[in-house]
Image (cartoon, rainbow, N blue to C red; front, side, top):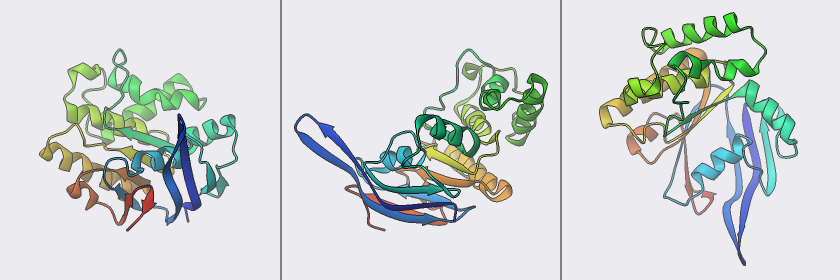
Length: 222
């Protein structure tokens, strides 16, 4: 079991009200799964992703990933955990505009004490993997939307994480590009054995999952 939660809850205080974003979420995810998380706006999808990745803390409950309890980890422990175990893919690509594609992919490697030459070597190999070996020196603005998202995918997998958290990764792409990117992510999931948790509004994207989770009002309903 790669990921497990027990009665996971997250509350936000807003003025005099308490918003229950997640309510007693219990789930299990096997290593190598491709998990899709769907539900209406405000159902808690993104909050669940943020809590599971250690970017925000739960109000109560347990999170166990790769045999490590995250709910009581301090900031330093969470940072170290993400650095070695987690990759992120976002709807907005979140590439650094003044860095080349290769330099963007190298960012996670710079946190893991690799030499500069080793960083370049690894990043180039991953750029080849995503079919952009001839675009390594291009700035993000010189790439198409699909190419930018492939750079973002390369950055997410470059440190060989256990799990990738993807928040609407095809939200800014047209249907053909969306299918291309989803197929690419599925291949990485299968070929590299990296578990994927993907939040999506798209029924087509949701069909790529072998484990499907649907949320409503902060609770799992499917």
